[in-house]
Length: 348
Image 1 (cartoon, helix red, strand yellow):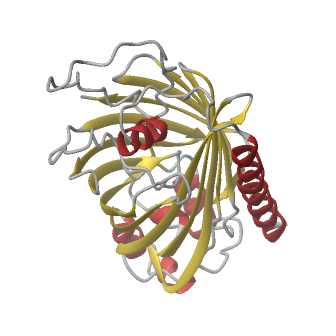
Image 2 (cartoon, rainbow, N blue to C red):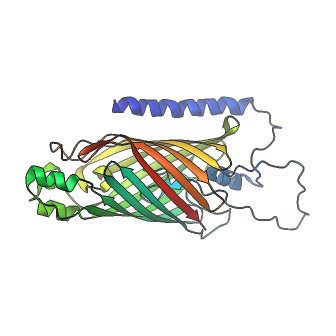
Image 3 (cartoon, rainbow, N blue to C red):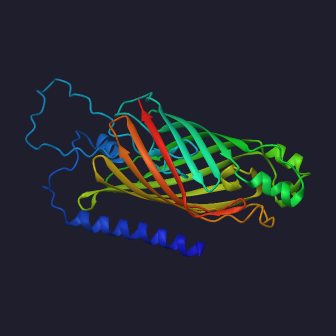
């Protein structure tokens, strides 16, 4: 079933690319521009941010020699994921957060607060990102993961008290845009993500090494991502569609919430987002999950892939309020097929 989901995601992305190519060839060269932009790079930047401002063809150009009024950065999209990078809920996109107009050396920061509820488990994420030279994105996120009834279940089955109700995961991220987007070439971004779990070592110690017996190796680790994204400005009902495909190399168990194992896996991540109105964005996100740990009865189940649907309200050029519904499958000791979350994001 997991491979079927992957095949569906790949097929949809391929269909989008083919359809966009046919649409582009059918359009007249004299067609009215969709975005109000003065140069290609800023146009692409604002497309990536979802800046849907129709160009006024009769607008007068400034007199020769006078500077043009600076264009804004567009609405604050994409969102922050739980790790703090720009993307959906659980994985990054190739676009960077708040890069600024062409020529920007030091961008301005973006902050977000995210709350995710999965059954009796909760995740709170506090994130900050900052982009430099429109190519380098630094970000940090602190995740507080409430373990729900898992501590009680461990005590009932094993007799051990893990001594805590939550763990913290600190995410330090560095991403670089290798290739900027052009009309024919997608944006390509690579990233390295350092994660530090504050609490899982204590759990391993208090349970006599039970997590180690299941495959736990360390409380911190690095992950590597590669993301490719393309925006099709008029793909669906004359409105833009953003498609993103990514790979993640990881040793993490439950995104690092239960630490890291010893074996590396390559996982697929993908997004499709549509902006039907200037103030609204709708997206679907897929994240492949693989477990480095062996199953421990009903206490630690094998991970399932994550599916998320997001709806973002673009309040103004600085603020976004988003809601999400997710099918997460097995989350430690329970199946969570109806998770939900909210995020408030602010870009200066």
